Every structure is written in C-alpha cells, then in structure tokens.
Image 1 (cartoon, rainbow, N blue to C red):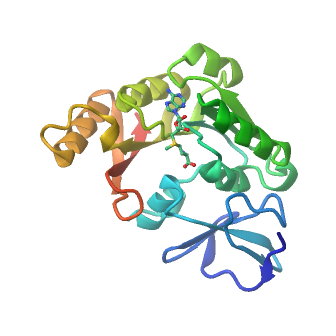
Image 2: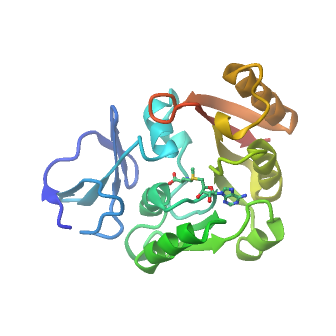
Length: 238
Ligand SMILES: C[S@@+](CC[C@H](N)C(=O)[O-])C[C@H]1O[C@@H](n2cnc3c(N)ncnc32)[C@H](O)[C@@H]1O
C-alpha cells in the first residue's frame, strides 16, 4: 500500500519514533507495506506508520505515560525479549525502532508466543523484517527461550493475559533481565481468579508482589479507555 505524502505531527523523540498528543508514529522498516491497516505517511525522512494505541498496550502506555516516552522504549540497535507476541501488531512497531529497514540498526527482538496461529503471522512478518525472531514457546519454559536468547536483555515486555501472569513476569525478569533493565508488564485483571476484593485491590497486590521480588516500580499506567481492566507496570530490575 503506497502511503500518501504529508507532514507527520510532533517531533522525533527517539530515533524512528514520533509523538504528538495521542498520535504516535514509527519510521516504517518495510516502506509501502502496512501490517494491520494502519495509516502510512511519506515524508522527506522516509515513510511513517501510525501506531494505533487501541490495538497495542505498549502504544496505549506511550500515549498515557506521565514520564518521558523514551523511558518506556528500548534503545535502537539493542536486543529485547517480548513474551506474548500475539499477531505482531506491537512487535512490528518495536521492530521499526529497534531494527529499521534491512536491520540497519542491528537490533534483535525475540517474539515468544505459544499459539501456532500467532507464530504463522509472526513468521510472515519476519520474512521482510530481519532482526525479528519469532519463537513458538511457553514463556514459562526458560530453557527453550534461553536457547534462542541466552544473554540477558535491557528491555523485556510481557503481555500473556493468562492466570499467574505476575509470577511468569517475575521469574522471566529474574532469568532474562539485566540489573537496571526495564521490565514492562501488562496485567489483564480478568485473567486472574483472586479478584474478590475488586480490581483496585488486585492491582495493589500485584504491585506488592513486584516490590517484594526486588523490582522497583517506575510507573503504573492505567490503560482504561484503550484496554479496560488492564494496568501496565513499568518496573526496573534492581
Ligand atoms: C493479548 S495477546 C498479545 C497481544 C500483543 N502483545 C500485541 O500487543 O499485539 C496475548 C498473547 O499471549 C499468548 N500467551 C498466553 N500465554 C502464554 C505463555 N505462557 N507463553 C507464551 N505466550 C502466551 C497468547 O497466545 C496470545 O497471543
């Protein structure tokens, strides 16, 4: 799909990422191709893809955060681990930032999901996006994930939307996240059984669990409006 010519609003906050208000964009690593029907816009710098925050929890968090958006994003050219990759909506924008066209930034994103139908879409995406490494695996099986990503990373994202998601996140951070690295955890309240005290109480319990595991909570971002009953925890491994 050819993008129309225009001016992308906002400024480039991180190389390959722009934001103004609720509009967020990444510099397309595969010009003239979109991934999920998102708008493309051609400029002198290259082609930008509009990141739809209602289709991506990381996108929603980037719009909502009260901190600097660069705190939430990995650095271009680094290695990251993404657990619960889905069909690749968020992954594709991360790939734009981390890897760029033909992986000229030399980044790497290991995208883990246990659903074969997701892997099919991720594999299709990976053909035109070098640096994207899809992995059919259970995020709880560290030996399998570790065979593909043996080194620790500075940025880990989890969006598995299944029971015990906080335990899965804590143990993944212990194994895969560097000290000082950022761990981003999207919590879906409805996936947990112990919500008899209400959602707010659950978010507090999860925050306590993260703190007692040795993580520092940098920000708790309520995604309501984009993803109801979801909270994104931005943590640092200390
Ligand atoms: C909400 S979707 C992810 C959406 C994706 N993060 C995005 O923004 O485009 C949750 C995904 O987690 C996957 N999942 C659930 N439990 C998992 C596990 N234990 N290990 C790996 N993936 C898991 C599901 O197959 C599903 O694709």
